[in-house]
Image 1 (cartoon, rainbow, N blue to C red):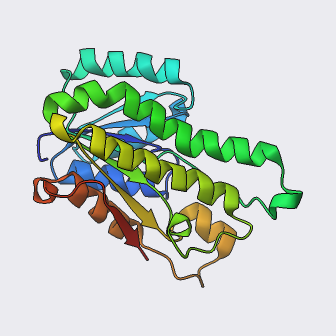
Image 2: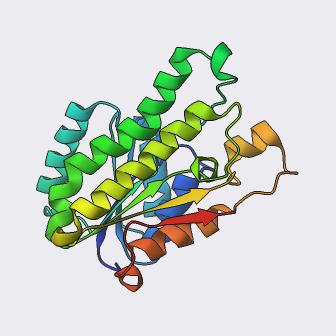
Length: 234
């Protein structure tokens, strides 16, 4: 992976897990492409990495709009050589949904859009470039979506993340012969600025660096035999 090209989605505000994943990849020698919906946030994260002497490029894109993601993939192919070593589908979001009987359909639609559609659109658009490099894809599930996870009041988020894990398994099987691997991490609550603000510091968090280390491993040469797996964190 050192010297390879990694595209990481959902790298937006400071203090979030995307910032740590991007910095970890860049510090370990990857050329990183950061993608998020906000042009200002992308510019700030790229500037932070470049100020540290790291190789970073950024693009603003609404990843829930497949046509826009297709256009981004064409641009990345032209500007970066057409071979992608890693795709990290980190874009997503969390919200409670309450009991099913009292739930708002809009919450379900939003969580499906930002968690599942973004991962699908990015995977579909960038698979040709991943095939050229025999690259790796990492998806972000959630511990709540795993068997035995507590989903009361979180069913919409958990369902969306469960669908992401199903997408991962499909890609792992379909792309095996092309040399593309697909795996996922499924963390409990991560110590991010947003979670600290919402839940305080008394929660048992997964550290952002631990998440970044797991993602890096799954994209590395050391994980060449790992495909179709979910790594629970926390």
